[in-house]
Image (cartoon, rainbow, N blue to C red):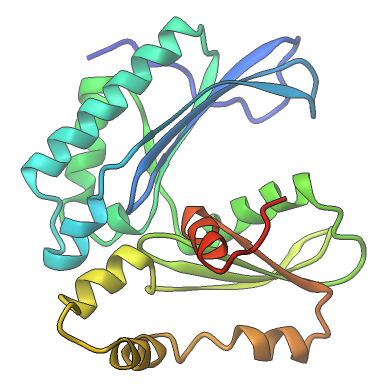
Length: 240
């Protein structure tokens, strides 16, 4: 087995600069980011890689990660591990979300990544996903003392949270990611756009995001994730 890199320390590192990395094993892609911190809140991105490996395509169709997809995912993570070594990364965190969480052989995949890459993968819950989204948004946006609704749309799930600048007050996770929907809806090429829209509305009927926003007098809604960026572009929204 490749010599492991230690996981991120619980406390701040004793000195700066300090290089860290993160690996996000999602349903639609695997992402890698390495950064150098020159202070507790100041950092520079050293490298970002996105590998479009759809683990969710197998996981949501058959509840099993197929061997070709697992091979591709492990190979991608091995390359990320090589970059961590080359960049002299001191600590990391690697997480897997709904595709691995919902797969019957998800534990086998996690064990193989550890055995072949020396990377410890945490399969996190939807609640932990929501918590990480809140931390990321809070680092970029001044939430003030008002409440906000956060919506994170992934390939396998969507997390909805009610937050403010101090804490995550409430969250729930729904199995309604984009890759999962593609598998559940099947081939829609012969259906009219109106028919597809109605089917999508039936699938997403439980998501009362606008009602939640009005009920709590929220300051606004923050939407995150690559799928949301794609939807914003399709809607002609400006990205800030």
